[in-house]
Image (cartoon, rainbow, N blue to C red; front, side, top):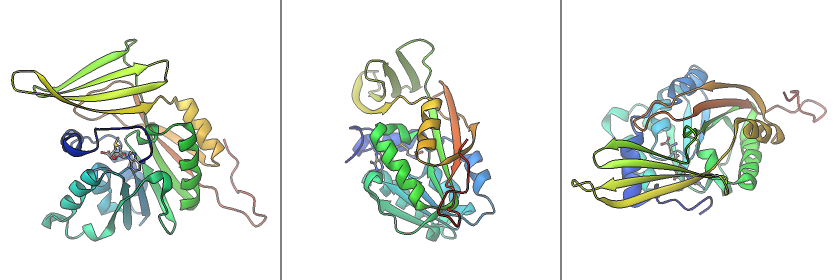
Length: 258
Ligand SMILES: C[S@@+](CC[C@H](N)C(=O)[O-])C[C@H]1O[C@@H](n2cnc3c(N)ncnc32)[C@H](O)[C@@H]1O
């Protein structure tokens, strides 16, 4: 297991995570807009229970969905097996693996890394992952990466009430440079009965731009993509589109990095 310890993506945490995110449409319209009509081979990293995977299926040639949560991928596989998916499910390849040591085999027209999952990793891990992504992309291929920059309105703690039985508490740790999200499950009488958490690293838009540039990926644009979910809006949520430059005849890259 790489990345910070998380209980939100395993066991009961994974079931609840799926329940909350399955209606989240953040980023989907913009990613579909980029892929529609391109017959693209897509590699989706940190695919989870397939919130993005399933939405993209009708618009791509194939999609390899990678995650290291067996529970979340089981939910995705069950969804792919439904009769209403029979025309598109064969385009999906579900892979249980750590994306930090992935050998996907082959090259892709597009790599999708959504839902701010990039911030699960520290700076060294992100550097290594971006270098791998550049290798996995065909020349000219695109990386579509989303980043939520949390804003707790000047506070260090914020609680979103999702339903009488579920809430999400978010906290900044300015010293560590981390942001923790804890899903709190409550009994009918309002007592907290379990907590499932994940910690992410704080990453500014400017840091991300620098990391993309240092990986040799050429940033095209960054557009607002939400949030459009049950948790509610705090902070900016953007989709970054970068491409992998192709080598020219001299072995140099053909793009000038912005
Ligand atoms: C924020 S969730 C996003 C899931 C999905 N994209 C969605 O929108 O619902 C982050 C995902 O990253 C996965 N993950 C965390 N570390 C990973 C790693 N090292 N390798 C593969 N997947 C990882 C988790 O299991 C989880 O599914």
